[in-house]
Length: 229
Image (tube, rainbow, N blue to C red; front, side, top):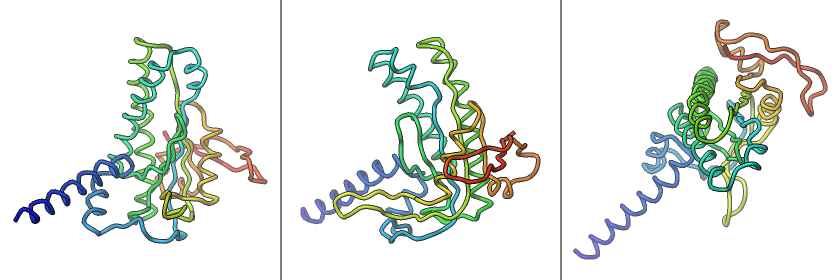
């Protein structure tokens, strides 16, 4: 009976650890599916169509050089706390943090139709920008002036899965569409959300307007990008 009791305690501890670790990266409903064995991250990398979002705070590096470490930590954690909550609400998979930037995608590990991916990603991006307004109101009173965020979204084929070895691996996505999302974010106007033509084609006409033609690194010809309205 004691062994049985201890076994149940170990199972509960494992579940608790799994939930708390995975919820740093995945929405709650996906965490439950992983724990129940309905969803796995153990599959080899495969090519599939996903929607990728890149975001970045403009001017944060400059601001961080004028503040002490404690204030920089507070600002960054407040920002990430808000963004992670929003991304989780819209079912995004957080790939990685890059300082004040982040990469998120939809369509893996849980399959979604391209239309659903685009709907969730764009709604998430708009909510993230709305959240920046409230954060700036707080930061203006406590620390400094306004910070703005750029967001770029692309849709297309990418190789998704575990990369690394048995000692260290990351669940990630790589490919041209990932690079495109990053490039789009780099030319996006601060405070806006720019999307690729592939994402545009998955939305209704009242959701976007032409942002202009842009030369992007690694792409030979200028391409049209669109701004969410």
